[in-house]
Length: 507
Image 1 (cartoon, rainbow, N blue to C red):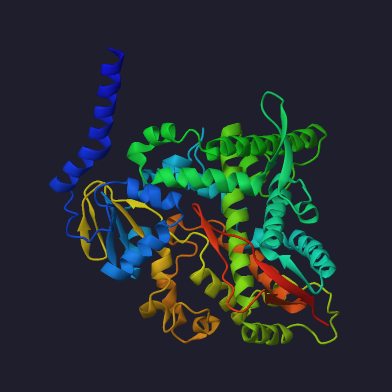
Image 2 (image 1 turned 90 degrees about the horizontal axis):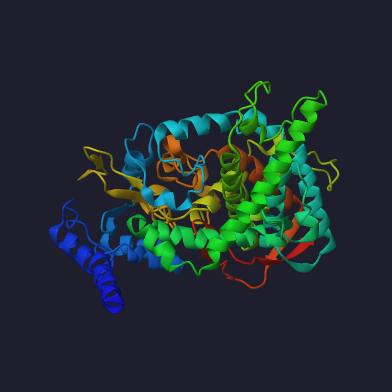
């Protein structure tokens, strides 16, 4: 009897995973056969799961677009586009498209501003961050960023003429900034050369967690399973052995610990008759006047904080590392950037003096260097999936039935010569200074677009302008060898690997 039950279970699994998708593909209920498909993707979502797990999904979709054109079927009900019209239709203001069930794989006990699918829920969460991430509020963080830059300078000055890993330094810089500006805690990541923190489990068992490793590991497995949401429960059970699930729990322990510590700081201050702290966490704890507590549940505070590790920490580090790599390999671009900086920095200024944000915030070539890096190496280079709502919708001139998943491949559209001009694979900041450069924004997805666009856009540009200007003005960087390629290990984001460069202090 027991063996018969096991056989029956296996038969049911085969029917569900193998035969049912083939039947659905042949029946074609949504009329998607008219679009060319890549490999077995039109039959099974497991193609996307495997490609993501192998960290090759973005490049596989890109190759499919180059082979088949601007519309490619990358799943049984999943269509990838690579046109600016699709960007407008899928992500633009007023789009009826909703966030796809893909994002459910990141859900914990509560939703955060990035994975909330419901429009009303997302709107409430977005409004909470609006003041904290406004340009006026962000520039008030300049002393904190400048202090962190001085700590980076100490590391680089000590390594003068030697090789350093700029990926690690940028990672320690950005994660330390997150802790200081959000948790009001300085973990000394820059000085220690590590993002490890001592922590305890809820049961009180001590251990050490390395934040970047834990985040990358958990995003690797959760993003992979996200491409098959209908098989999510089964796949999570089958992949229970993967360390990413354990690492996700450990990351939650770390975040919970520091959220509790930060909340306790305000409790102690209020009890002492002092006003609460004023940092980025404040927007989740108090109303805009800092008078009435919001009383959000601990789980919601934790998931919002954990989201910031990835978005404000990891993604900005990816961008900075990529831009430094491009600058290190293109000395002529650095010379032009320094000439622009020299126009705003007084000749008598001490070379070791800090460069203020007011001096660099409107420099066109500096911004062009940043945007060109974001174009070629966006932190999130795959398509962000949305779902066609009830009643269907038109995307890039094609009518799609409700329930169809749609996205635009950022990696592909960022390499479209019709949008970005000649030599789209080359790092050419000057393309952003052309008279028609404004037209390129219609195909620029580094921060997505529309009402679901990245909340951290302002703070990311603010940080990148300060960091890139300071590093380019103060140091020479040289790659280990000409043509050295910066590798990527993709999870949800395109995490860079090591960036070894020889750093030399300028006289």
